[in-house]
Image (cartoon, rainbow, N blue to C red; front, side, top):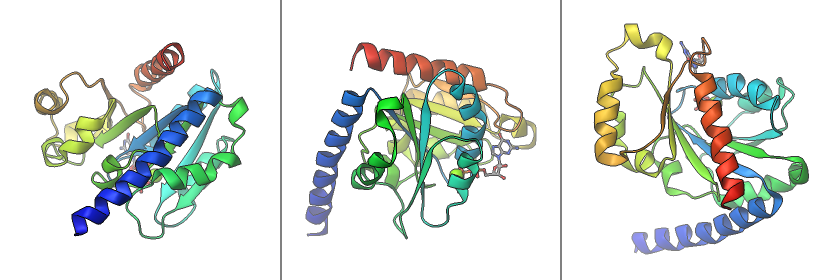
Length: 220
Ligand SMILES: Nc1nc2c(ncn2[C@@H]2O[C@H](COP(=O)(O)OP(=O)(O)OP(=O)(O)O)[C@@H](O)[C@H]2O)c(=O)[nH]1
Ligand SMILES: [Mg+2]
């Protein structure tokens, strides 16, 4: 019975996600869904990424959190358009929440809309927002077991950021282990080790993102 209800809910989400995807394609906006566990560094990576992107394209952000507008305040401080969604307990954003805030952006003057999802490696993987790409962020302080333990998130991803590499010497995290685990789950997943603290690795990730956007324009 419960499974049945779940299926219906996900079905309704799929329909709205489809509408979002169509609208983004019509407007020429690339929608990116950024996901990770809490504290892995999504907002900090955005704080480092957005100033570099702003020099090249028009970008805006949707922040998803259970409560507070703290992350939106951090993005607004960079003079990037941002809307905060509070889910009031829900562990993920869904397509309807995204649809409800799209009109708050000047979509005709936008190239990229980044969604920072609620910090969680489970539920966000199950909800299509209508995005063009899913990027997962894993940090070196979380341990190497996260890829096999949360396989759906890493299976669905189009790109993987490994953040906090400045802390590698102080952890037992292994980039070789990541490569081995990905062989089983998502063998060709583009992976970008970086540090939002030092800025190391940022250019490679931004270059890849701009290329993905270009491919999206050529093959909508
Ligand atoms: N050493 C180090 N610390 C980092 C790095 N990136 C983020 N942090 C720190 O990690 C903590 C969490 O960063 P946030 O960017 O707020 O994490 P988040 O994923 O947005 O968290 P939620 O939105 O709560 O899910 C902060 O104290 C950051 O300063 C990094 O590359 N290196
Ligand atoms: Mg955040």
